[in-house]
Length: 324
Image (cartoon, rainbow, N blue to C red; front, side):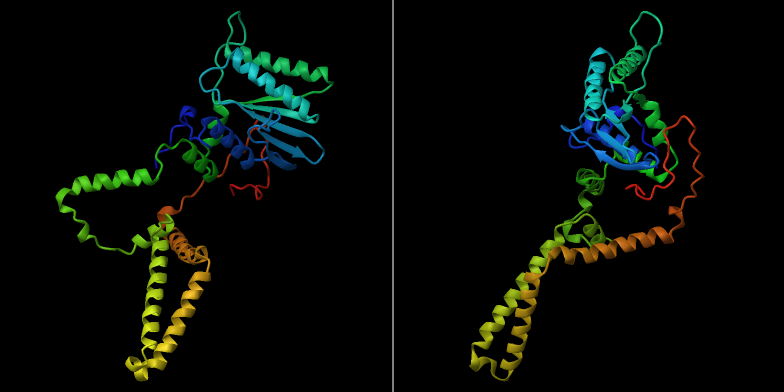
């Protein structure tokens, strides 16, 4: 599989927004390697962030915050003003704030010296301003930057967790309904007049595919069975009521009628989701067996490199992370 290009202008939308997509990716990276000895990780969410989107609390009361700003095209006075507003809110809302991470989908350009305003100078000015604001309150807050290089470094690791994030957030090929329709249209166009719907042959793989994509054929089949049972019960009832026609078969008809009535009642009372869960569980087990039996799915992963001393701290135990 070709590794997708990590281009933040093409990041997948989340809740119909690339800004929310970038925020969600940042949250997933925090969850993938949470700080050591953390007590909890909170998702502040839109409209209630208080200057941070992600908040990590420690048992001693300290907190670390992440502010995500989807600025893919520019970083100047307007963007810095938004950051200042967020940092001021974080200072006010979290008196124990120790670290403040700013996530940007770009690398800052330009020199830190000289008379010309550059993105690097804007960032340095923002950090100094944050330090001054914290000092006024008798506090110290470390300002850290997660830029494009940081994200790329994490996402390009030879690790299934990061490979999955990279594929989800930046792969433009999505196997959705439209994709399958396009592929089917290509097949029809290639076959041309040789294709006739009446010649369709049902194959074994068709049903597992229907189950995996939650096709409505299962619901339709359930309805057909219920209707057929009701129809058969109605026919038997009419036969039983005609004593002269049923004769010796009346007892058998009564017994079969009662059985159909009982079966129809059971179908009416059952949870259809439970019925669907059985073929789904069976199909997933068959897919897992294919993976286990086929060696081409086995990949020997090299040992992970140890993070440098300046890198964001990694947690020794990742059992609680939702990505493991």
